[in-house]
Image (cartoon, rainbow, N blue to C red; front, side):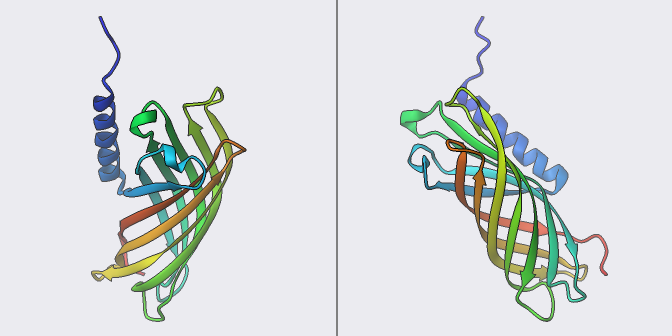
Length: 182
């Protein structure tokens, strides 16, 4: 009896779990591309992130962000299909929306925190390190309660050692909702 799970089923199961998790926790999904070292050995990646925002200005244009979970998965190319690289990070950041009136406008958000980089092609599978990110994009306020859509491009560098440094660019679309208006 063969107890190995087919590779396509594993991929489908991962996507199903990611979508289910995002529906339950109001997390968001991202499309990622690894850049720099080892980028030629991986395909387009997928990410999942869950953030908590704390508005610190009256207009809502200054926000402290706690990214409680940010994960990325990069499968190997066809010639190196058993290879996988990924990361999980927890970061804090500060979003400045360039608008005097509210949450609608262009923004920049630098972040820093902790990361764990995982590789399945080395003897030691994971290492801990420092995560740094910069997100730039557009925030669009919708409704009367302060909810907004954000569209952004994120650069992230996860530095966890010589063979465990990972850089990526990600396209993110998120819906941030507010339960009560201030």
